Image (tube, rainbow over all chains, first blue to last red):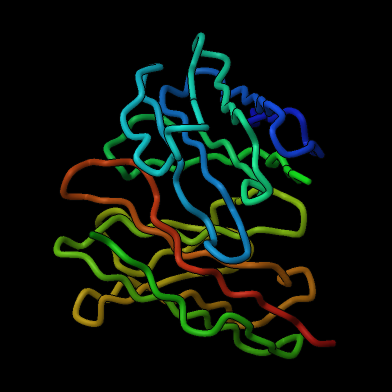
Length: 115
Length: 115
């Protein structure tokens, strides 16, 4: 049963520290998404990649967030420096590039708390 | 820009009763439409989607949804609620016109099932 995996599942850190979240997409999927879920804003897109190339990162605060895909099996989301307002659940999802109609498969999320 | 409206942030039904969760979208071109379910402390799981063809779509766990273009709606129904249906449900759209794959989510509806 192929699944998207995310590490860590939980992270507590102090303001100003660097946070790195990792995602392993389903093997063979060529599109990877990062979403953030908060009580106030709900689910919002941060960035997405197709064939490892960034297609849209307009939802991401550029001054502190960065997203990369070093290879097809790993996507990373970094926050440096972290702030309390970054506390949220961060989801990674992967899919096949079917022009918007394809299913996105979500990982279990990384629950981040910045103190 | 697309938007999704889910009427009712909380819906409570009795076990065995009809479930109706409402979703309306705003888009210049009819988008692709999705319903996802989120159980506590888990990622999102696809229930069903509409991309083309028959407007009544059947999904997992006995759920179905009907795309009504004239009403810009994609309401989710289930004839008989089960305790295990208690979860949060998200309606989402992706852009058919541009092929942009990222999802725009509604704010979610939390379904409670009373015994």
